Image: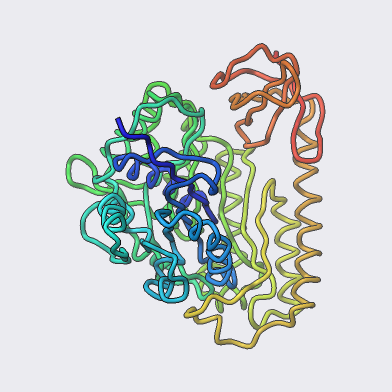
Amino acid sequence: MSEAKKLYIKTYGCQMNVYDSERMAEALGESGYVETKSADDADMILLNTCHIREKAAEKVYSELGRFRGLKEAKPDLKIGVAGCVAQAEGAEIMRRQPLVDLVVGPQSYHRLPEMEAKTQEGVKALDTDFPEEDKFERLKSRPKAKRGPSAFLTVQEGCDKFCAFCVVPYTRGAEVSRPVDRILTEARELVERGVRDITLLGQNVNAYHGVGVDGRDRTLAQLIWELDKVDGLERIRFTTSHPNDMTDELIEAHGTCGKLMPYLHLPVQSGSNKILKRMNRSHTAESYLRLLERIRAARPDIVMSGDFIVGFPEETEEDFRATLDLVKEVKYGYAYSFKYSTRPGTPAAERPQVDEDEASERLQRLQAQITHDQRAIQDGMVGRDVSVLFEKPGRFDGQMVGKSEYLHAVHVAEAQANVGELRAVRIVESGTNSLKGVLI
């Protein structure tokens, strides 16, 4: 038997890229590859890239440059670029970095085995198509190895919203939803492998409209109720959502579906209606706050998460203060905030930009408020009983670390619990980024 080839994958960006990297590793497993944690001993290096931040492509080229010495020492080493930068740059990557052997977009990575075979023959391989064939169907056979208790599961890709700052419609394409039966099959396979907590992924996940076995489309809420019936699956979450697709039945599910966790990531991006309009977000700060009132009425203990862009083109101090006011009103348990950075090809990139120093100062003020609110919510967990899914041993003997239903990291000393167990825990202390608890 020939010795297995080693694959090193470096993943950038969102949870969907994490999921995609897992599927790429599975696809290349068909060609005899096993994963390694070191690029130095790899037979193939694959960068799964993200295009959401400024100068993303330049950072990829810089990373590729670091592999030049490895390539010279190991001429048979194959180097590939996947993901959204691959989709956006295409053949330009090979032109600028001749050491690259293959470039594959996020909709074509199911073709990796065929592409890898071409590279073994000395042929460079490029595929940035949006094929009609279902990549997930091509990858439906998964290895049955055990895995951790939490997993991502992509149910929807692409976006039709065309926010003025976003490249997703151009790199991931139009909205496409996977059929219900294939999602359920994958969920059951994950459970068989030890998974108990699944996060449903999509660029606009609550716009999900996958076809059911009767040929009619299902909503995300209906999909969640189908997943609720899967034996052994204990927790369901979903991300990322758009306020305009937060339907009544999805709100109701948060109050009635026991497996749907009390955590919701619902990006607003700005608290200024002027900026929201310029972003092409199609909701207002007022409509967003009314929506949150309805969500919290359905599930009073829900912890909210959000996204914010500070220093968007034409943002004034007054616009920024509107964002700060919204944050103070909502009190997010988690939030991701960024200083605006241009994405080539998007409408916002052509507009007058906010002064860099001013945008940085605003971001610091916003993050200070977010951190204050996050800590207050976390401190408020002390004395409460939560359910913890243990994911791994802690740093100390007998310690176990897991996640509560609210997604807080919880560590328990002398836990006497196994990975994958759900246990009742009383929170006794709040730390900087985690909670301390004791088994009940």
